[in-house]
Image (cartoon, rainbow, N blue to C red; front, side, top):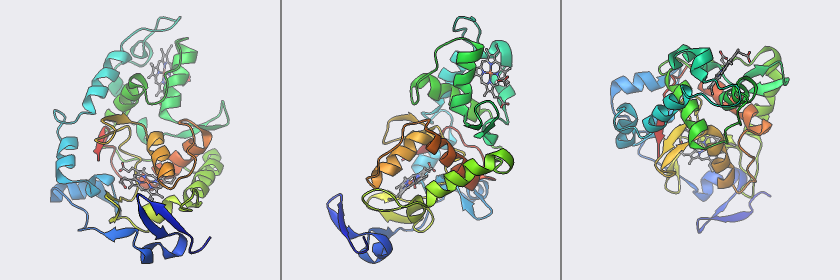
Length: 277
Ligand code: HEC
Ligand code: HEC
């Protein structure tokens, strides 16, 4: 495979070790930071949130709740939270009280679920309550209702550090997520690491690459999507960029990867709903 030439967006380049040489990645002007104060908030132990790789105008949108389009989903989530549904005719509120009671939940998911003996993430946790506690239909991934309530649960934890556990029964799943992250895949034969560890702060075509620490900002509003989207949707996009077959949102592979990505984000603050290009 070494030295094989591929075409990406009309630009031929060489895969594997010759990436940098072939010039797929170009140096950027450095990550933009709107303010010193934000820098302190979004850079912890040398880890930088994607916020610091965003344009100042995108950062400003995230900072101001009135400008942040993701807040529309949070508000939608709030309405759904209080709405009775399913054969049990119960709302989330009936059992859990105010959404603010969920503060502290978002930073620790995905976690090991003794019931299924695998990991469970926030979206799946919400749907478990819908099916088992409310006898309602599960919500579909990346539909406004599931995005809204997931965003609400993230939003009430804003500012708290991401803090997933990777020991105990979660360990084998973490290891699988880690292996996924470092595995080369797709026609371009690239792993997550090749962009987000080796080339953060550089451009791949028009895209400025961040460290991929997306454990604190999803669901995120993407200007490109013109809507909020899940972390798993982002994974699909990153898989497609290297022409690898993406998995479905909610696939075990992605939940394991989510734990690894969230662990890479440990210590950075929750910033849901994030805004990204
Ligand atoms: C009939 C009561 C009931 C309803 C209605 C209900 N839940 Fe739950 N939920 C629970 C219980 C009980 C738990 C604790 C774990 C368990 O028993 O499964 C829980 C756990 C959770 C958790 C995990 C909390 C943690 O600390 O890890 C989340 C998130 C959650 N529910 C969200 C929701 C959402 C969102 C809704 C509405 C769509 C909802 N629940 C509706 C009873 C309910
Ligand atoms: C070919 C380069 C490339 C590869 C390989 C790649 N990504 Fe990305 N990824 C990007 C670009 C470009 C973006 C958008 C800009 C940014 O946030 O880095 C992005 C964004 C992300 C984000 C969102 C960060 C944020 O702050 O919102 C996450 C999380 C992410 N990638 C994870 C992954 C994972 C996990 C893999 C491996 C399955 C992967 N990426 C593989 C290029 C890549």
